[in-house]
Image 1: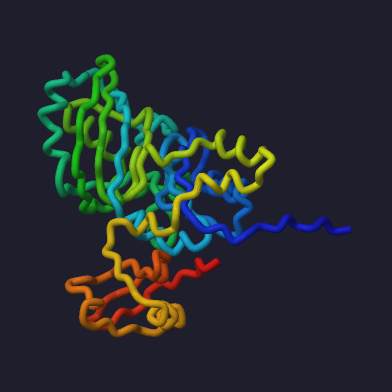
Image 2: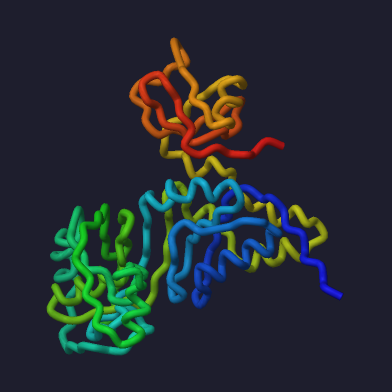
Length: 308
């Protein structure tokens, strides 16, 4: 007799997971999906297994807003060990270069401005960037020489937090999309006349989500094991939390109905927003769509099914 599959539900919202070290982002999403009994889930920005911290997990209709979170700023706290460079730029790789030199705190402070603002960065060979359809890390693991081109990234802020000893330094970095902290550690080590790699990395912010929103895996497990099956879902944030940084446009019920059918809406008079491009469209406080204003016409880009 074939066992029946457990029925999952249409669960909508964001779970801001405090991902532990040793768990992949894919494993984390699968765990959340199982504990929530959710039909659909994805994440907004991969965290390496050796990294911990904020992993935004989108459930159901929230998956339609993932790009808005991934495009937001990120904040990391990371620890660099001086004296060794690895082929992965973290503790997983083999050492490929060594140096006896150790930078003084003042020397580190002197170079931080060089790594702030828009800079060019060569991503790590062990990264998810595709080369002729293949992931760079797959090619590197197969022993192939991986050469990636430098690309522009934006570092909003890079601060030296502390230097626990001569071998290590702790930094805070606020950066834009596409930044590799591992590469930052590598390049700072070279600039300081030594070598360096990341030994600890924790993400503290992604877009509109911060440390205060994070939920540990253990708490989810405890809630899921309780008598109230809905308790674990009380940790979810609303779908539109991801859209906090784009303008809101309010429409009436007729307009909402048209948008849900994929049709545009003409906004005139007091209802007509000025200078609005991409926007979050709501009706009576409920999220209807992500829209785009073209003149006086509001066109739906993504429509949400959140009623009931």
